[in-house]
Image (cartoon, rainbow, N blue to C red; front, side, top):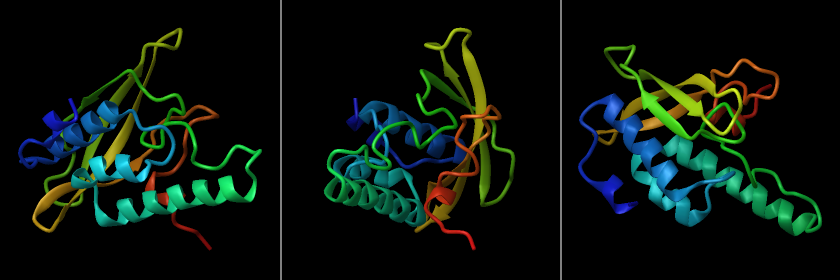
Length: 159
């Protein structure tokens, strides 16, 4: 299943987002990707996002060493969408911009929740080394416990 995602390069920003989320679902990432999971995601993400995810993994590992009896940061939950529990399906919508960075809405559904929960996050796609890759995910969930801001924003300190 994972190898099916590695076919041809994305021809459109929408393709890039479909490939990224298809791989995320195929490997079942929880929390920050492990080095092996990051290697699987790497063809679909920008260098800046990859560095952020490496940082998150290093925080998790450092937390484990520092306080082995406590839950480390970035150990669980879906970092790639607004909902901690993640989604059961996604549908990539038409790109909202005609030039990079491309803004690509993604509708997620969590059918495990009753009632079913739907939300829209936005993938930001750029061209890097001639390839379309996901640079960031802007969270669109509006409820209290939704991830806020953006995925990349979790790893960038603000003054």
